[in-house]
Length: 62
Image 1 (tube, rainbow, N blue to C red):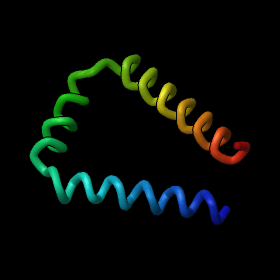
Image 2 (image 1 turned 90 degrees about the vertical axis):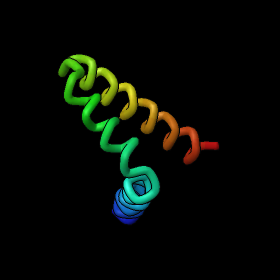
Image 3 (image 1 turned 135 degrees about the horizontal axis):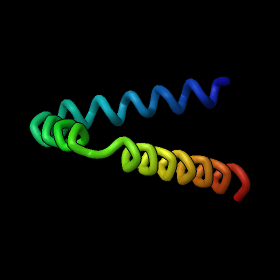
């Protein structure tokens, strides 16, 4: 549970830093997401989740 909370905290740090440092590009990125299909967003989200799981597994076992 501690690792999960640490991961969530790091996610908030990174996302917060992106919005603080690059507000206009982040707004443009969010607007571009609106025009994407749900299938594309689901596929990209699934790919990112799988990549994240694989990376965590690799880092924990090597």
